Image 1 (tube, rainbow over the protein chains, first blue to last red):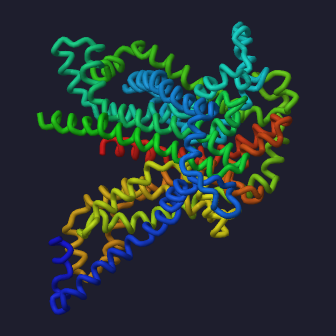
Image 2 (image 1 turned 135 degrees about the vertical axis):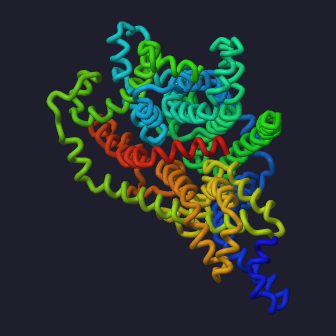
Image 3 (image 1 turned 135 degrees about the horizontal axis):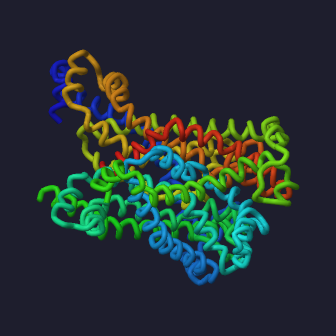
Length: 317
Length: 282
């Protein structure tokens, strides 16, 4: 307050306070208006509209007249295909945490030392993250063709028995996609953890070693707790990403065959674009949002907030 | 794990052997798919079908030449650049302007407004995709690059403001006083002091926005059905399903569409990695 009023006080003193006041609000408004306009028109309005459309039976054309209340939601939760899609999202969350986290953490710990080529390795590991989902999907679509590179490499290693219909087998296709997703996103986790590890001072390890800690103890008792905030932020992003997954699945399998690799988002687009059931599809969008929203709130309250408090006590102590 | 051992590692050269083995393995896993696509573009579809693992023999330039001489590829590249430029230019401009009062001025409702902006972080484009499609139809923006760029900019506002605000807040108040004494109004201070001093943060948000826009798939998929309006991700996906019989052509097209993103990444990688560490620490 002092800075702002003080800065113009010299000139403003002569003017009545009301004019000064009005001028200040005008200035604030000019700075804020473009962002608010863009944000409201292209983000808030569509999201609010989604909620409204979700209570109608509507094909996107014609009058919005067939109000059905919560029927669309009832139908979605009753549809085995949608339940299957939700289940896939859930499996993806678990798989990401169980496989990607230890893998990325292990690699980051290995690479967190002075070694030749470290800069180059970082660039290489991060490269898949930079490629678009579309490119990743098309690349693996080719690699996983029957008798494609993956099959031939397996045969070449004498593992021909392992060859599968990677993208056509109902029981396998979703796990194939998980491997592709891991290829694409693991580099991001590694870079994130490496950045976090740089914040762990060497002195702590030296102190731990002097106190007789083994390197395992030093890892468990010094490194991991200090890396906690980074891990928790990564986990948050990985879970939200798993709930919203669309691009790679859509390009590689369209959620098929027979819904075996569907996610909530592919189910939604399928219903909206292919079946012209806009009202129903937006109810799925709202459910998708509600899941993300509830999860974010719970995560903030139970995981991240405790994190911040822990962080400050640690610093204070 | 790191400290004492890394020092030991520099004196005992073989201590790092397992590390290099893991690093090599991962490098192979990352580079083989990319290498397959790049080299496959130099082969014929017949060569690839006969032996997916082999090297080009003989090397053919035909696939790359035909992509590079096709108008589709260049048009899609151009479209992607236009969308990324509009979306990024817009979001960085409006967010920098909004971040100024949100970080450095006192007014009623400031924190509520900030929370309102961060709220958008919770909405993936996918949630709003269908209503956005209907909105764009009403506005006459279907089949238009602007129709993709405007929502992209809107959805990038939350993260951009979140990154810019603490940065702008940290710039000392003395500078604002000094600027005022030199006769600089709010707008002068914003343009002549705040924007230049916020440059590192502005570069970070610019890179983030370009990457997000460049990779966006669902919005162009819904909004742009006219092939002459397609962006690269859409073009790559459609090309692969339309030419599914011609593997070599797909690989050449895919390779060339990777190039801009990889070049951009190599040029900006220090900033990206640096920005990530900043985000984690801050």
